[in-house]
Length: 254
Image (cartoon, rainbow, N blue to C red; front, top):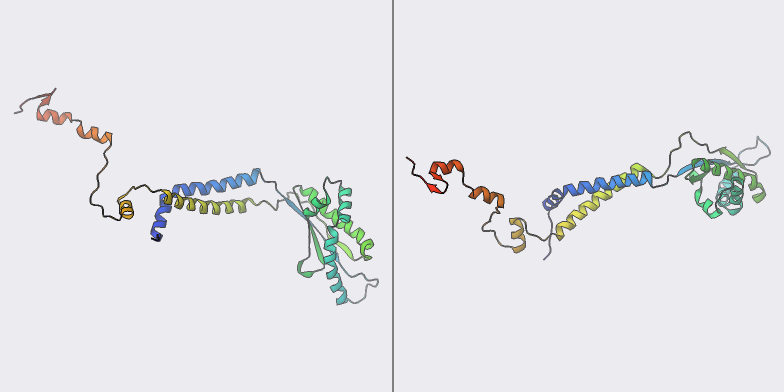
């Protein structure tokens, strides 16, 4: 027989184990915050930009759209050259980095927005000062070698990376991690509450008897503990004297 659960029963289960749900949800958020703050290495980013422009000998020459289109197409080639071993080896040698070209390449990303002629070289590293040095050095090495590689001289540095006074890490985000942990903790705790409810087959109320046995409840026997039994069977001294009972003897009262 298919079993269905009503919305009322869902709220009853949640209310029944609301304490557990709250504790697990807050606990997950706190653990995420502590782990993010003390155990996850923060990463910093630094960006340097260069401009790919027209290489003209005459300053008053008109801008040719074909030249612009060519420069934009060259950017895709430049993106590959920037992260090539030839460029990165010189960067490693100049900065004396204890890194391989493959490791350094993973730290560098190259992009240009909306097919513009401005290329951004972004470096991610746990050391903000090193990230700035790598970004600026990479662009400078690329600019100095592009003439030999492609016989062109159309790269100019637009913006160099600058180390901020108080650099902020780009990851991890404490607020984001806490928010994610809070939502996941709430979902897991609610799921655990329903799992415990399904696994709990004990009979606790009259409704449980009716649901499991499909029989009506005719009567209920109350449970009396030992304390209640002692109170029930211990004679009250005031009433004992009224009845004339004293030390096991009965006196007739007038």
